[in-house]
Amino acid sequence: MIDDSATTLRAAIAAASERAGSRLLIEATADGCAVPADDLASPPAKEPYASEVRFLSADSGLLIQSALHDSADMLDRTSASQAEAARMLQKGDLPGALREIGGIVECWARVRQVVGLVAQASEAGLDGPGADATFTGRLPDMAKDLTSGLSELKRAVQAQDWAALADVLAFDLEDQANRWRSWFGELAQRTR
Image (tube, rainbow, N blue to C red; front, side, top):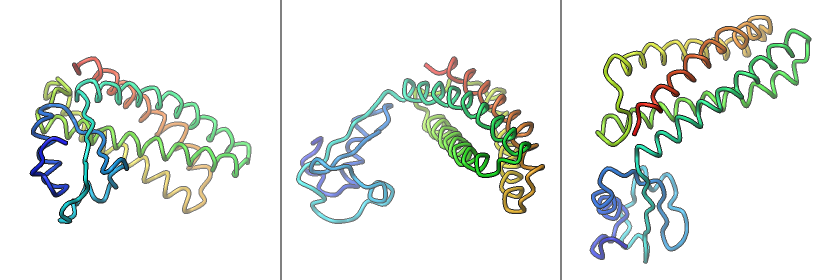
């Protein structure tokens, strides 16, 4: 417990954040149980929230650097999955391709989460990305291109346009995987 006067979750979060400084709060427990994400996003006014609230923090730069490396590795595996799903579609193995696509979509959702983490750390001035404006300036265009590719993937699945889906996987999203993998790798090197 950081501050005995912090009887609400909001007050406990504020005290922990102040004490953590440039470190990121990565975990919260109340009376030994994980604090629900909804409570963290919108802390209830309940007083007292719990008998004991504990927080775990991590160095923001190391956390971000680890997330960037993990994301680059994940994109390597996703590239292989995208190529396999495209091959399955070309061979007419629709059930197999659709199984692969589930994991592919999860990967791209994770990419968006990591980009959000990087943006938050940069805005907060934490020990995160030491990237210059030229480097980070590419992000909006990259995000727009990714959204376009994922929208086409969704359109092709909904329209059951399997030829277009195979093309999106083999070409558009493969280009995206290469771009994002490179960007994550460069950013990880710039992050301390």
